[in-house]
Length: 82
Image (cartoon, rainbow, N blue to C red; front, side):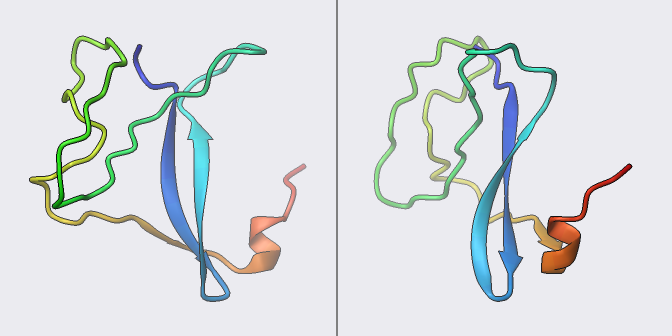
């Protein structure tokens, strides 16, 4: 199954949080799926999602550490748009 979400790590007042974003509209009761792509030098952990372009593992043992940093204030995080 092709992932319908993606994740990012954000820092809020020094605390890191994992935020999940939808890549598209998600139907009610549809399972949320995303590529964990966490870095691990230990062992390969198999993935059984069945998506044709899947790497075959949920961790990324060969990749360099890649991170996206989003810097926002707490007020911006909870600010609603009209």
